[in-house]
Image (cartoon, rainbow, N blue to C red; front, top):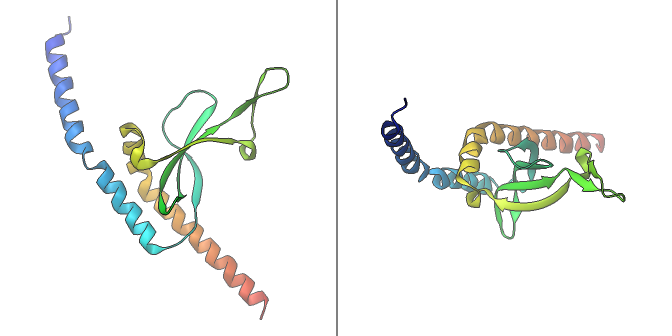
Length: 146
């Protein structure tokens, strides 16, 4: 038989370690946000990366954009279905998705913030690639007008 006291003690220890480590989550995310904002790219970035689990018919995505007067990471919840004229659920195409809710990443659940930390290096690299593509587009337009 499993020793429940031992299991509970180990669980408490793991929870304490998680709590100690997670105190730095917002600080780490905030540092990345500040560096991105300081670069003043001024371009929203939504690569379509799902973040975390959510109820059926919805998707959460990590994005970077401006809300109010602040550039920050966002968790956007999209609805992937609608109710048709007969009351039946219909799956929406990618371009038909409905934005249901936007939450600044710094205000999202701890689990989502931890998951986002794992994705941030690849997210920033993808964002840079997008900016390079935009610069190349401008360069081509300038060349075509010469």
